Length: 205
Image 1: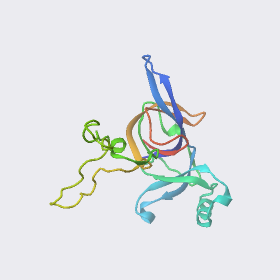
Image 2: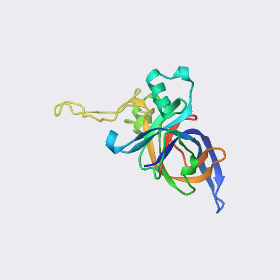
Image 3: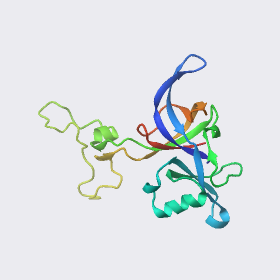
Image 4: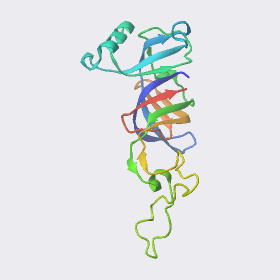
């Protein structure tokens, strides 16, 4: 699906036409430049590679510098491919937030906040084992049994246990576009999206 790269700015709230206070996320979207055009004849599929946020030449590797030079654009910090764009685009073309309109529904992909190593109560919402009274000793937040003792004599893959929480790719679907602000390249999305302030997100129509 066609889309753009953006940066999460933060959250705010706006009043709707019927007077309701709607929480929304502010995203700086684009402008994104076309750095590569992939065709079915050459690459086996059709897509457009977009770049977001310029960076200095000294922070660019030699192969990527040649890639950007071929496209005739400045080195870009973030790259992503999108399919399904309508119309003809050429190398170096700029695509802005005007791609979206109010009341559109979009899918947003980002990397969630990392929470570090967490137990099963916080990570999976376990209720804990037993009671905190009657001589129980530090077992309230324990996971309990994780496998059989005789058969199958192993712990099944995918068993919910303690471990790394967050810092993973998350996609939220069907989020409504509340407002488009082309003068400032901003997009107001209803609700929250994954990631911390300043993180890079992919917005697809």
